[in-house]
Length: 499
Image 1 (cartoon, helix red, strand yellow):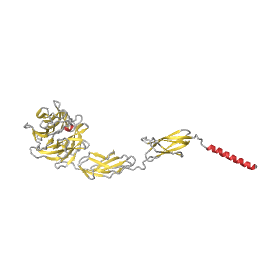
Image 2 (cartoon, rainbow, N blue to C red; image 1 turned 135 degrees about the horizontal axis):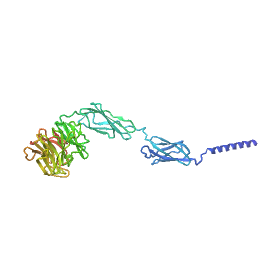
Image 3 (cartoon, rainbow, N blue to C red; image 1 turned 90 degrees about the vertical axis):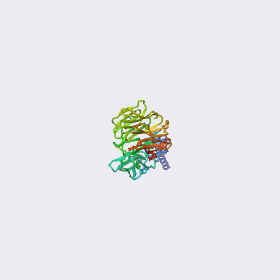
Image 4 (tube, helix red, strand yellow; image 1 turned 30 degrees about the horizontal axis):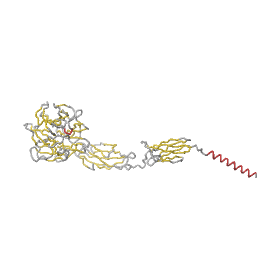
């Protein structure tokens, strides 16, 4: 009996020891804290929704709400690594120490994962076509590429030629097109485009090849076309072969070739202003001539310039004043100012014969006068004065004995400067007889505009168009004094010159 009692006492002692030991290991119900915070995208701080938030050691798993916020409650006190996971982003981990009855704040800035991001497709060269011959000093490059994830693509265009060792790089392009305006005539070019997104290395296109035509040496005709809202100057030979001289990205017009200088003067607009430029006959070596004093008038499209054949000085109107300036841009000189404040719009000059022909008008382009003066400003002849209607085009013959111009005999006047019945007239300086209508066989409902003498003085080159004011313009020639000699030279063309 004594032995059984002793055994019972021993068992009771062991139970009490175990009970005390268990109570020591049990966590008090107040030994918990909270982990809360926010998940945003790195760089933009945009909140991220449905991000999986978990801890190590493991507690509860929660997801962020539409504002990027999350909360894990009843987290036992201790040290934790808190992780954030979301498809398309790199997993992110932050340390957290949980203490009793305290909220621990954790902020996650998650980076976009690029592990599965694919690069853009290799660019496909579409323009110019392979081995195309470019008939201009300007070329438009075009290509195509696409990104599988629609990531933004940036391009680099590399351009080489067979004439020198130059390597031209045009980088950080965001459009799949580029215009280059300084091609070398007669050169062969090689071009390649690379494309890349922000996650992957660049991918390369094949190498494209094209040629530029040789310099045109027989192009005696100049004219203008409107391309995508800009006036563009072309030259052409007698067989109709054309060559583009100025860029489609600039507004260039009123070409006048000087035979002695072997260069072409023209007008080019920048915003609401216009300047005189010169260039070689092949469209290269473009040089700005004017600076502080610029050509100006009632309508910049209706003013012209003059560059006498053996002179280095270019003449131009600026409101009521006539200036001349050397083709180098030096030696600006005021020659004449109208006494009544009328605006000078057009000019023709013979330095050898001390002769200047002017067309003046009011602010609306009307109340037209055409007259001749000496370089001293003395009036010699008056062809027309104070007449209603519009006039355009003014030129002196090779011998400086005749003047041609275009005048709307209907006398019509409107805010849009529309002309209804414009004919070409010729005035003989030597005889002083009234101007003669030379617009033989002009189609009804059309206007003959912008006449210029041919080098042999037997023909006139000019623009003809419908009097509706919106139809296509074409360049024709006619033989002076001969019926039925109108000949179409160039379609969709205007502002001609022939030297």
